[in-house]
Figure (cartoon, rainbow, N blue to C red):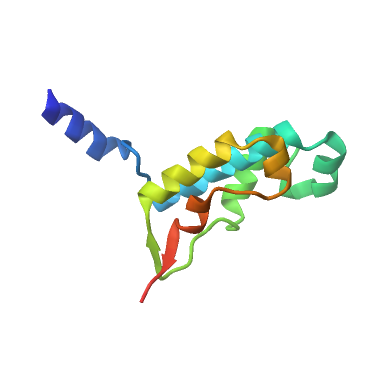
Length: 113
């Protein structure tokens, strides 16, 4: 049974780590969840095309615009990326609006050498 878990973790990219593409997609989804939960309709309207007219459209636009793409020489940490996404999802509206983000988000991508 232990071998099945290890194989499942390997193929599912689960078990606390994610790829760079998963990070971009999941961070976009979480940020848009926060925007639609915390920002007023007036604020979202002022953001216009950046956040779309629905939460799903926001996630699609945010992931597609390249704003969350990582630098080419990035030393990516799937573990820190997962911690970042989890931390963003747990933020209060007050912290989200004040741009108080988890430290793991700054540690997701270290500069390459």
